Length: 165
Image (cartoon, rainbow, N blue to C red):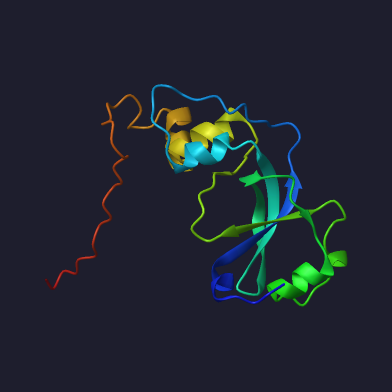
């Protein structure tokens, strides 16, 4: 692999193509095409679960695997490719069925972070917050109070005031 001036902006994704999610590529007539819509409509557009990525000679493992829009089935991970990226590891460090995709830092993509659990946990608690959920369940003072459509207001903290002031 040749070293080039642009190598510093290259990102390498490591993961597997997802077989249970497909894109149909249909055009949505109500909205004009943008970069993301164009990327989604490409014939080779797929979703892959990505576990790690390489950037500027560093291999970074994602804290939690995420689903990314990729193009094509990915390439087989080979020692020659890893050495060209500047990684001091071998293909044996990856699962045999892992693939690799190459993108530029400014390429457009779509990231999906799947979360599973009960509706109470992944919807209500996530959006309302644990304290507000407890008030709701217990019938706290703010239950039934009309709210604005904007962001939830946070109570202001009290400032300490000494008797000397």
